[in-house]
Image (tube, rainbow over all chains, first blue to last red; front, side, top):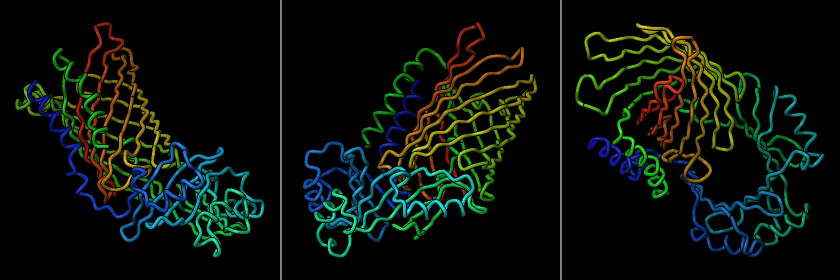
Length: 199
Length: 226
């Protein structure tokens, strides 16, 4: 009996210690954080548009060189993700959407690309990205105001897709970025964690 | 988060302490797993698994078995995998009159991804050729793992893993059923390595008519994947 209690105590101590964490080299990191840890300017921007909105989730991201902050929220039936730099300036806004919300000019190009490059493709995640035009670049409130009011002349739209399928000899998940007219900007294969612990 | 992890483990460990006083068997199950993607679709794996009883921990009879596992998996679609394997088990290897088991298995798995959260279903057929008997078995396992720090699992971070498996042996003399429920915590260590601690409760001999048996197992596995 003593040895069982001892083993459980050791495991609990082990779990709560930073030993394992310290062993790994963390280059790319995304961590959930508290509201108080967000840059002050970012909170002011969020409060301007979503004062009193509950359930906003906050995240910190770093790749070792640069760092950014993110706020994720649900508003008027849509999921938004707003990314800020470390001074609290808005970098971009992303909105989770359905395929029928993609503009016709983009959906045609995207559809053609998927048909040409993939066999049995399945879209698992689709986001609309809003990038500030030059005149709004220094004014975050104008930029978000334009998005919420749908002033499409005042920002650039891109579409980010996560798809599963087979492309040539590759099989798995891919991230694809398209511009507003459906031309591919970037493509990368999503490296998934090994499934050896659940398969 | 640290407090949350400790509380989750403590909640799961508490009933196990209760069981310990009433007699079910306690097992430590250390494992070392190595897997390698040999192509975009094919993965080969090897695992060493040990069953060591907590009772009479230092006695030779406490080492209940050593098992070597060899598996192969083929990715059919981004979500479906099929595969097979061979296990060889030596029971009571430190005692005279040890027993062996050759095991063949065929399996299929379906994995759904929700960001970095994963839900898996595994269906497995086994043929157990033992020195004293032969058994066919069917197993179904559902598993779910998800990051504990944020929505994305980064190296150095922890994840929670929940699994339940039901199985039935379906040839006449050996027919019976078993359930294995487990809760664990893992650490993604980077470099394709991870470490997991799982507490598992096995409910055995469900249809035997001789009373249901309980086995409590503490599994520690170090995974290396290349």
